[in-house]
Image 1 (tube, rainbow, N blue to C red):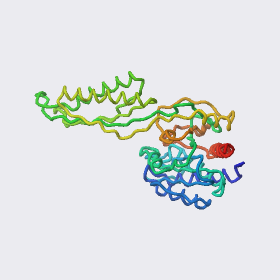
Image 2 (image 1 turned 90 degrees about the horizontal axis):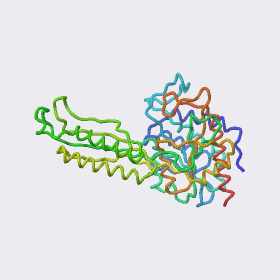
Image 3 (image 1 turned 180 degrees about the vertical axis):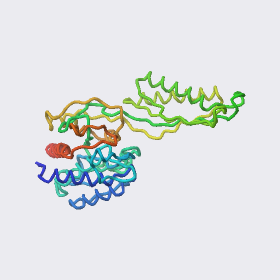
Image 4 (image 1 turned 90 degrees about the vertical axis):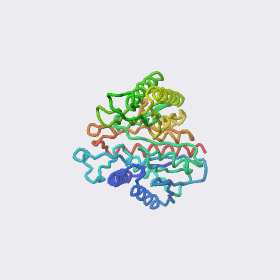
Length: 370
């Protein structure tokens, strides 16, 4: 049986704050990665790296339970007057999504468990959750080899501190981010027949895209549209940047096909050419029901059911290949209740004690079934 020791709160607090001061954006987590490696070596592990990601094992080979934390930060300037974190990263980078807490928590579990434990556990410290698809890179490099089940948690400032939020099935939406580049022919607006209007074609495509998404019950957003040179000149180029949110991959594919048809039709009408470029793809995060049941059994009445969110989370890629789930870890108090991705987001490190308890209990349950 693994019992949280009296050092946990001190370690969680100190480690979270060190990580907070190191905050680095996706794919650039060099100092953060080095800190994690040093800590794991100090605990007796033999960490390996995949890019700036880190993982290590203890116990027997095969049949492992994996626990994942993400380590990257966001390009947000922290409001230190509010958060009180005066020792924070420079250059407008901030752990505004709680990844410093996720990482400190997993390091604390690794510290308590110890590298010589017989229980087969893999600790995964993943780079690039916020935009560069780090999970898939780590999977492609074998981080799930020999893993039977995987779990992760995410801080939640809308859930009271001490609570665990669970969600059966879809917890986070899939996300397809894509650009539509339309090329036309410049000309004076007084002679429109001599040009090919890239902006007009892009607007028609956008209208069709919104209709296709609405008909399939999906969320689409055209967040940026740019093109043209002057008010009296027909635009020869226009680029539109979209995001599409979904829980059913087949519906995503159907909507993208409708958008392609609309773009071809616009080309015929206006004499333009188009190109659709996918910039990112995250599958929906679908929790395994038995894994959710295990969390509920372990944590009892501290668990509360939560609604799915239409944001994306790249832990979803692990759950394509291995059973498991992600849960919310409540951090809300009267003082700390600002949303994720806010320059005012902060939390009390004592909230992480429940996260350590959850992971230790999951490890114990995994060992018991072997």
